[in-house]
Length: 639
Image 1 (tube, rainbow, N blue to C red):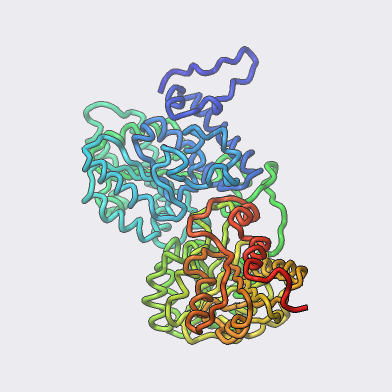
Image 2 (image 1 turned 90 degrees about the vertical axis):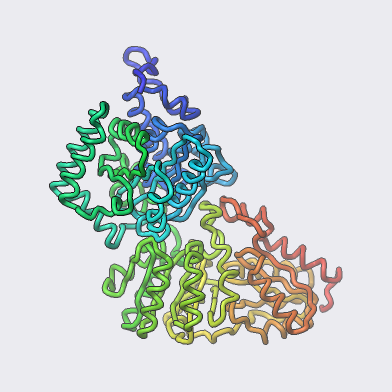
């Protein structure tokens, strides 16, 4: 580091802010140690204040401030590659690579994405949004570097939760056989979105808390401060093997062929810088284990890491958020817990998402039948299959965007064997500010062609509880439900849920000219379109399909063959979606009535508020009416 020279303030004046002057990592490298420490505090202050207005992943980013500064101090981005697992902790990286003045646009329409995007900056070498991708992708980059005979570095940054994920372990198995220069940073804070679980989490915790190993950490810090000279490697091996291997003779990472360093304090910036300067000169794969605090520097986030993993706007003073309407997730958690209190066969399974899916309610009240398997959707699906073989009723709650990871298990294990696993897909549909990695716009397409599966979507909260109850009583095979993020129409569920007939639609209104079929939360758009068409003098049939599979062929055919046009509505891509299934059904029945469809395009939809994105992409009642009118006479066929 250079000597401190950036403070140009006069006597008694506050130092000039450093962050506005950081336009690239080159500017960072000009700062001395005290300035870097001050920069870290400015970044924290900026994040806390900015995200209070926009929302976002506050806790994870507060935890990696020093780590990110150290990486950019030692390595040369974009030539050297930083691959962040999930990349929700990439806000600090964005700020240090020329985007600090745009951080107030994070997760806003046409602003910075909440994750890393290759199209957003040359410094974002790999885009992500799901866990467990960093090590494999980074290893591929390292292999490409070796093949090209280049001299750059590749650093994979992964949280401890990522090591519960199958792809991470698969990558670990190949690193030592693939390259000789590779750096993994294990950012250990004991959290993913929620508290980490499982044997690996316990292993990391043992490393952190063992009293003798704590002494080794102190010696390691002293050692790193003395880096330099010909005896470094021999001394490093001596201090690590004599102490660490005495305690942990089967250290996980060294069995995979990675030299292990740490754990060290992930908030000790000078120590991190010296350590990376040493590690970049090693000609063998290494892993640096750092201990960080999720939410560092902001007490509300430290006190509630789960809440501040990712949240909407909040008050800076105390971290409080505005109370909102009851969400589908909250209704789900409450309903399944109530079912389980009456039915001893009901069990709940989640993949590291008790808070997001609200199975935390079940966990609190019936812990003996609650299972969090970590970030391992494939295992969660197979585990649920095993439970189902023994007569239990597993409710597997996973976001739609994450359920696609378990696709093979749904086909090969659930559907083929007709095992009654209840697939509860939260965030089915647009996920707004989170963007393309989190939109649940593909699950109809990846489920509807699988034999032996039932798939539903409710139009409101009352019907949602009826569908969950129907799932509880269905034993013929796997049954799935998709439901949106946030609250619905506000429909209050009945005191006692109703059992729905499988594959039976609800005909809300009968008409002659137009048939509108509104799936799930877009049923409200169908209602708007109905009202508009009726105001123009047309007679409208309105159908709530309820079931994506099996379709109610009798109802759909009856109200399609004599109509002038059909229009479907779905919060899903049109390709291989719900509307496509209606077209297929009518084709097989020999019905040639034209079908217009309202849904998302064959593209990855950007981030932004749902109303903005719906207007941009034509997911509106007005667009539906415009399309329908092209098939109708200028005057209604009926009075």
